[in-house]
Length: 54
Image (cartoon, rainbow, N blue to C red; front, side, top):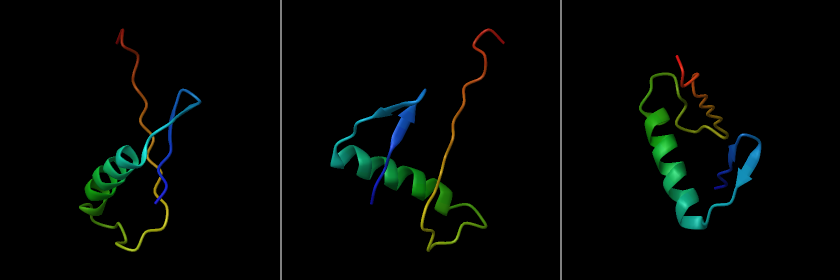
């Protein structure tokens, strides 16, 4: 397992425990969706905030 978090172009270091939590949360949510192969190899999630003034 390898989890990488990049925020605004900066890689955020995470220890093993944090990587494991992130992996379990993201793969658990995605795995509950129809169409996600349980044997997936790589998953990419992008989150972009809207303009806070909107």
